[in-house]
Image (tube, rainbow, N blue to C red; front, side, top):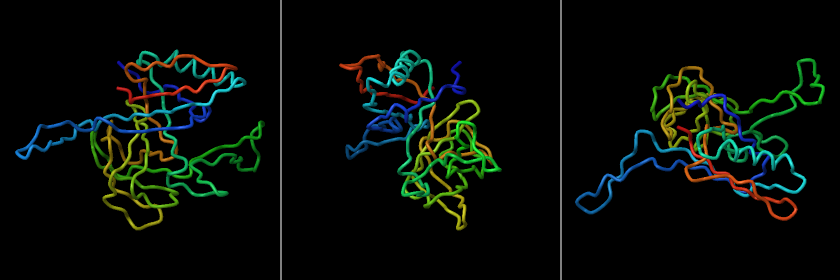
Length: 244
């Protein structure tokens, strides 16, 4: 039986990719044609899968630990039967407040109640925007209700978010329609989502809008070699698909 929880997270910000792509392919099937010769498309109950690609990660000669991380990703991921938590980097496009001229999904350096930091001068961190499920929804539900806290703008066209499920682990979703929104400071949204829920959710369950994650594996046929060119420079591409 596959294990989707307790898997390591890919340190994607550390690897410095120069291009990223996230998608939800395979959400429909062709149902033949009608009398006019037009294809009839039907949505699949599973709603396809989530995919993520990070291209041209920047590894230089003095980035020995980054080279080690790439080697570890290949050692663990080749074959597609060991899983990772893969972040979806949405820092610049999510509903995050602008602090010092930049959208901030996460605030760092938060001190203890007495104003002191840890011995290494670091502090606590917390997300600026998050959600909470306000109505239970079953497995494969395509509509959820959640209250959103701290958003700098309303949810409107679409945003990525993730939910940590007890069995299926981290799963990523996005909404394709805002069906309803309450008029209050921290609004409750009724959202049509894709893909549908991978596991039932309950009232009070947290929803992450800052750097959502999805448990993923290397897709069939993809391997991550350890390679480099002169002076140990490398620009590897990482490809992931939702784990089932």
